[in-house]
Amino acid sequence: MEKYFDNTQIAFALKSDTELDRAYFLFKMIDSEPLVRIGTAVTNFALKAHLPVEGLIRASVFDHFCGGVSEDDCMPVMERMFTKGVCSVLDYSVEGKEEESEFDAAMQKTLKIIDFAKEKQAIPFAVFKPTGFGRLDLYTKVGEKKELTTEEQEEWNRVVHRYETVCKKAYENDVPLLIDAEESWMQDAADDLVAQLMKKYNTQKAIVFNTLQMYRWDRLDYLKKLHQQAQQDGFHIGMKLVRGAYMEKENKRAEEKGYLTPICSSKPASDANYDAAVAYMIENIDRMALFAGTHNEMSSYKLIELMKLNGLAGDDKRIWFGQLYGMSDNISYNLAAHGYNVAKYLPFGPVRDVMPYLIRRAEENTSVAGQTSRELMLLKKERTRRKLEE
Image (cartoon, rainbow, N blue to C red):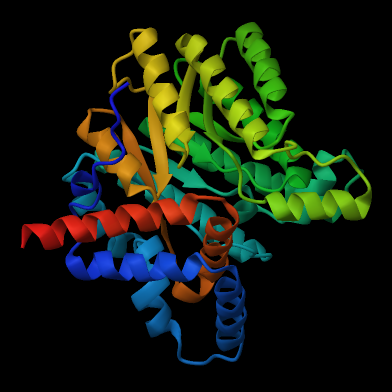
């Protein structure tokens, strides 16, 4: 099969020499686990002590991994990417909030993004995180089928109302809505709620999308059961497939509480699980829509091959490839150049509030074997290519 992902001229066409150098320096730092640990601790301390470090963070890690502090701030970045055929998923990446007013604000932000997406071809999806709309502990209690207090039931009703409000608006405006996955112990409640909304709003096509983290060994079975339900009840399945971003936390909690970890036994097992889910969705694409969120080149090639084998066009509206902004540009831009549907998750939000997301990104890059070294190799290759052209 033709190899797409080594073309650095296409991958980094939008990056100036200065931006290329900054990216190389940043991934060089992330490549060192001790530096990530020290940097995380220093950054957390500086933010808690209200030291004036936001400018420094913005000029380095924030601007590489985030589109801006607001939706409007993201527009120039989004428009530049779209000139190369790469779309954006505006992702309000504020995490760890606990107040009702903050959950309502996140809902309003999502409604605003649906309005943006309706008007702009460059924004094919809206998105939100479950814990943006309600407390993690509440999801956990609901998922474990524990009895709620009157106050908790009222609180959960508000969570359901937020989901219903954004899904209804997405349906009315014909904007597909991605709902992210988070920790396994809160996911059952979110899954049940999203399945109900799929049944309600996905009667003609996929509007409401759930997310499956395929480093969990139980997710392929969940997908197959949901498919049976969809066939019985006559709705379409929208699903974003990712590998997952909470592995260390998941394994640690399972060990502490003495239950079997939900995480696959090895990286190859996770990869096989991911690829099996993609294959299952392509086999059943007449009732499904797939957002393949992956930075794995081999998985991307396998999906391309499956599409060709099944006679599916690269720009089939039911199949999207997705990567995070600031990562795997060699996959995103080369796929777009070959006519595939590609969207980058474009995180945004106040610098201080987005730091938990950025710290998780840095830690994830450090823990995924080969990811950072691959980024460095490609950046180095493009710097060398440009020097030879001078």
